[in-house]
Amino acid sequence: MERVEHGVQRGAFATVSEFRSELYACLTSRADALFDLCDALLCTDGPVRTLVDLSLAPEHRRGHGALYSGINRGRIDVARLRRMLAGVPLPRASDGRLLAVDVSPWLRPDADTCSDRSFCHTFGRGLGKHQMVPGWPYSIVAALETGRTSWTALLDAIRLEPGADLAAVTADQVRDVVERLVEAGQRQLGTPSILVVLDAGYDAPRIAHLLDDLPVEALGRLRSDRVMRKPVPVPWICPPQGGRPPKHGGEFVFGDPATWGEVTAVTVTNTDRYGAATAQAWDRLHPRLTRRAAWLEHEGPLPIIEGTVIRLVVEKLPSGGVNKPVWLWWSGTGAGPPDVDRCWQAFLRRFDVEHTFRLLKQTLGWTRPKLRDSQAADRWTWLVLAAHAQLRLARPLARDLRRLWERPAEPNRLTPARVRRGFRNLRAKIGTPAHAPKPTRPGPGRPPGSKNRQLAARYDVGRVLATGESYTRPAHHKVGTKPRRTG
Image 1 (cartoon, rainbow, N blue to C red):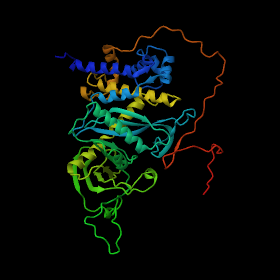
Image 2 (image 1 turned 60 degrees about the vertical axis):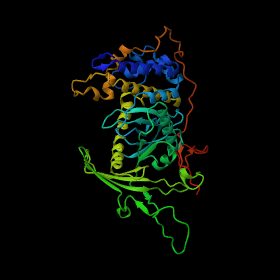
Image 3 (image 1 turned 180 degrees about the horizontal axis):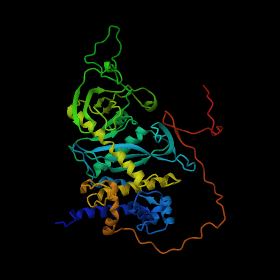
Image 4 (image 1 turned 30 degrees about the vertical axis):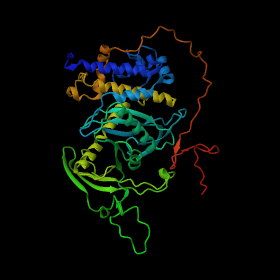
């Protein structure tokens, strides 16, 4: 029988220790420097402000030169790290696995020497207006839990290249994650399909079409000005003038209730925060696809992607704002009241990813380093994801080291930031697989008074066209002037 220490089984300590050993094996070059940097990220008091401040932590036993050397020239076996993240215990919703996909930008508006930047969609601070700011957008996949929580299990992160097709990249990313989960035994035969929750910026019908050969269901938010098509009435009566049978039925205009028709299912749920939540569902609705944009090079007839449209209206909002209806599209058909409630409740769980993004940026300092190389940004991103995984594994081990003004929390209800406060004590018990640093002498460095005459290359920000190709500014175009119209 396993010993119990402070109400926690010793097996929990072994889980964290095994993960740290596997993480050290994933660092193929400058492993000691990268591992000490990850420990400093977990054990530093307070939020991370700058990258060089991590070298002052006692857990970082090397100088700041080794820190930058590991970030800029280290190597990480990302494929092995991805399989390792898929193999650790993951949260499971009450009705099956629940995944969320979202894009979080690493904004670098003034970094002209950084390569592979693209325009990231964001909001102006304090204005609430849409803005396109240069930076590195990252597509992140996370497993969600049931109920309101700030914990998620980060499984994958991909930096979107300039001109990348978001739907195609997301579909390939979700496919790889699902295959790793099946390979790791996280999903058995006979279990419900994996539900992937998407925000309004994704083309949910197209992603569902690209993943139709997997046990995956797509649930995405739609704009309130969309127009869907109903199925063709059966039996279809051929008009006297003849002609081929139609592929699409009547229009379903989101903004026109007269076109909605008969409701398939209606549910009313009483909630504490939103009052009465009313959900209406219409079955077998599909978008009318045309030979433009993403379907320009599609061979053969365009597919008809049927799904269920759900309209959610709540009685009130906690902020007191206007409670506008939320439109959702689910890739399944034949939805009943239980399916409708499961879909809109799963969509509300998607906002847990926003808490994780805030933790990564404000506490762990994901976007704080001023790195020049995009490959170095990828290494730092994976170190942050590995640190977050260690916090999740240490969740049952941490004590509530709260401040005097904070409320007490139950042992299983600690936030990731509170778990991080006690990780230094946990590290002292489980140790570190990294080797001790060797005594060295600092190099001579640049001679005093000399200037750096090697100018760094400047890169233009990649632009995305409607065809999915990257736009490059012509050579004759001057910076700060608008291109002349030719048509």
